[in-house]
Amino acid sequence: MDFELNEEQRAIAEMAGSLFADYCTDDRLRAFDGSAEPFMTALWQSCVETGLHALAIPEDFGGSGLGMTELMLVLEAQGRALGQVPLWRHQLAAATLAKFAPEAAAETVQAAAESRRLLTLSLDSLANAKGIALEASEVAGGWQLDGTVSAVPLGADVCQALLLANVAGAPRLLLVDLRVAGIDKTAGVFTHGEAVADLRLSGVVVPAEALLPVAALDWLESRAIAALAALQLGVSVEQIRRTVEYVSERRQFDRAIGSFQAVQMSMADAHIAVEALRSALWQLVWRLDAGLPATSEALATKYLACEAGHLVGHKAQHVHGGIGVDLTYPIHRYLYWSRALGITLGGSAATLERLGDWLANNDKLGWKYDLEENQGI
Image: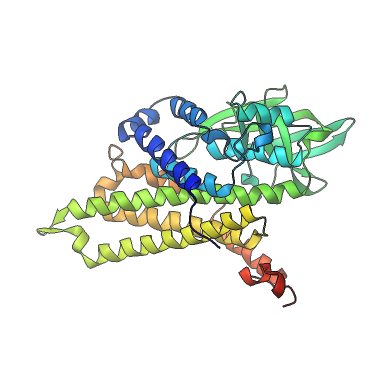
């Protein structure tokens, strides 16, 4: 693996970092908290103008045709700034359609790349204890959808969504137009301020080509994990930076509390958790961009993202003391984001169980099995 960024990747990271840092000031984040906006529309327009909204969409459809490494760098910057824009879901939904339904969904992908249409996706039911509550039944010319999908990001604000449904007892992705009759929407707001909506579908019929191939779900899930982990990395990095700044200035017993051993150990634990996540995430996006299998790496990254978000979030709150729960002080937003990302990822316990199941059924693990000369091992 080569962990060196090339010149183009460094330029993308710097541009994204500057864009999000300049826009997402504490004052603007506070103003957004009190607004009724589903997302930061002015920031989204800047993302469109700079092409950040279409990095992962293939060039044939009007996107930049870049990989998960570039998207990871942008999402880490978004997480550091807490920028509330639908970057990863919009373009990964479009990229999935471009790969698995290039003819049937060509117009949708083109519209997404040109920002004429906003897309979303929801994979949350994969980690739901109750399972997938949307059923697809084959009918003449397509599929009839009945059931519910909870807390779809921007479900009341976008045109189309990739949703999970049970098809013959197995989870499959379908492209659903959320503007058609038969969909009741109950709008809400997630923990960190993201607009969501519960969808209840009754007798909604989609065309046969709306059902994506079986392979589409695995392809999308591993990339969704990388995207969420990149956001978590950015959130946690900034959470630590702000906390270290605070404990370096806050004094008790005529000493900066950052000089207390207990505080130093807490911050060291947080730093180790973040760097473990960073290493796993970089390996994951490298494998995805190289076209290598990445199921176990995705699950390991998912677990580390859940653990890091929980550990860093609570240690940061703890060393802040009483001011950490004051909603006029900005640190609480990072805890809200880390908890929301952990919920979306499905939690560490469920992820560890899935990874254990994978290990029990796969006896080849590690980079050496990717090399042609070791295929006989």
